[in-house]
Image (cartoon, rainbow, N blue to C red; front, side):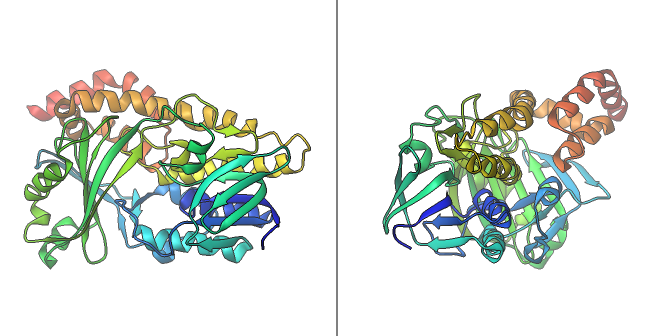
Length: 387
């Protein structure tokens, strides 16, 4: 389709790009998705898809769910502090390769076009279109979306988000004996004593466990593989297991108050540095940013001014504000991980506030207000549990 000018070109077929392609194709727009990999491909990720993420997907993704997590284990440096059956599903686990492939298939079925194995080298803005330079030649579109991850080529080529801050995670798929799978059950494990300024996790999958450590601090992370090995060694469910796959990757720590659009280009998901700075959840923000971007793009294409500024405003109000509250909470947890873990294990009020925010029943702002108002009760519950 050389020489064609698309309505929208989306760079990247991850959750943000796939959901946006689906929504735009459903609106009747001519959409091209460019993906550098051949799908499905392995994607480093714990693979936790939270309840609030599932609620925001525009279609049913249950065919690729592996397991559900309806309970939580809180530990500190390998010592279990709390094991709770919540009575409702917090998240479903997925293999990201299968999950991402399923999402982009929904977009293609809705009418979007997908080109795989195409590496984007940069974008160039002209007065009425954008040129996307790729390894397979140039493409043009009236609007271009960078959905190409935390190391976004689209963002770099336009000088966007030059001061982005990212944390680092290392993750492994671990095959364990049947006894290990049984011991983990349908519980998600979080250990805030696994490493400084971060946490370790275990998520159940159908036939193995996803395990990782995340350092939620900008800068060069060192010794994370050693921290992961130490974390694995102190978790009972992981004993006797062996690593099937190991990989590290950067995780956004939340976007600063900066424009996420420039001319005819905007950024979504990890490319926009949208993620929870506490636990690093990015899929939810990928889906939400896609849902916010779709009507703005459609309106811009119908308007001769092609103004995408409404997208940045929506992100600031509906996403960045909540990320700011999450960042404050994360700062407290990572500065005092032992104290915060102990309080969470003892206080039912604190558990209610935190778990409901993870599930999506409360925003981080509402969670913060609940914790501030309930601080005396949290302390009383902690003291009574100690006695």
